Structure formats: structure tokens, C-alpha cells
Image 1 (cartoon, rainbow, N blue to C red):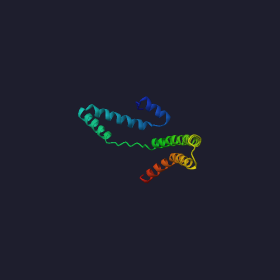
Image 2 (image 1 turned 180 degrees about the vertical axis):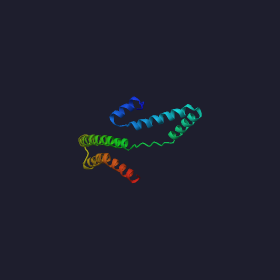
Image 3 (image 1 turned 90 degrees about the vertical axis):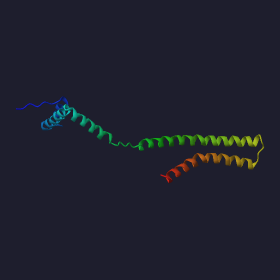
Length: 141
């Protein structure tokens, strides 16, 4: 009966049933063949150079879609917060300006309407500008 020499990882793989004795013998033959090749300096330099050239030519492409989706989610959350805060700032600012216009300046209906429209345009810009930017981005995508 012949003995077979195997490494500890090979033995563990054999015990788990991942490798057979025949496969271990083939791996050991290949390892000894490569070891014999590496003893010759010319061949070892050629093997190293060839391996380096093969590895240099590999193109690695990474997808940034997941990262950009996360940026979109965070941006949408920030925009939602700004829109909610902007709502209350516009409502309170408009009411304060109306009170100042009426009680300090004695403003009439026209001045109050211009103040209301000013604050409505400010508030509408919180929604109109993001929608416009999305429309332009989708048009050129």
C-alpha cells in the first residue's frame, strides 16, 4: 500500500469529503511540477513575468449604483426636513410681516396681498426647484 503525503488543509478537506485521494495526488503532482519549474532561474523569471502581465491586463469594474442610491435617499430626507421647516418659517414669517404691515405701517389690502404672494413664492420654491432639477436630470439621462 502506497502512502500519500498531504497538508493539513488537504487532510481536513478529505475528512469533510471535499477532496478525494485522487484529487490530492493530482494537486501534489502539480505542486511538485511547479516547484521543479521554479528551480530553473530562466523559467521562473518567465513564469513571474507572464503572471504579472496577465494580472495587469485584468479590468476591474465597480458599480457605484448602490452608493448613489444611498446619496439619493439621504438627500431626499434632508430635502423633506428643509421643506417641513420651510413651511413653518414661511407661515410665521408671512403672519409676522402682515402684522407689522397692518399695525406699524397701516398697510392696506394691496400691501397684504403682495406680502402673501411673496411668501407663497418663497414656499413654492422649496417644491418647485427640486422638481425642476429632477425633470432636467431625467430629460438628459
